[in-house]
Image (cartoon, rainbow, N blue to C red; front, top):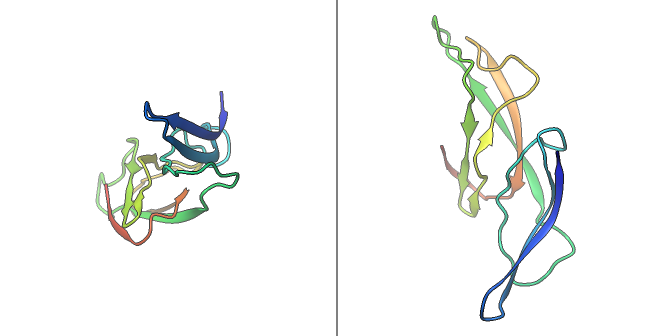
Length: 118
């Protein structure tokens, strides 16, 4: 079952409040089909959400015998302003087959200049 997360509010024992605005679905059958989100903390309550951008991921599988896989493949993007969180790469295509290019979109907050992937 899907869940539309508006925001999370955390209050410390010192009375400090931290807000985590989301405004996205946590569902494998809604929106971008992600079931986890990384949300940056803000000090003030907001009615708008962090702008989200979509990163285009192109995965090239090699051209050798046995090069493809049916395994679950995931990626995490690391940028100068944060990370995307671990994302499963999947779509309606038969992904990661020999000598094939697969294209995926990952929607997340702007993590800035990408520094590495995992």
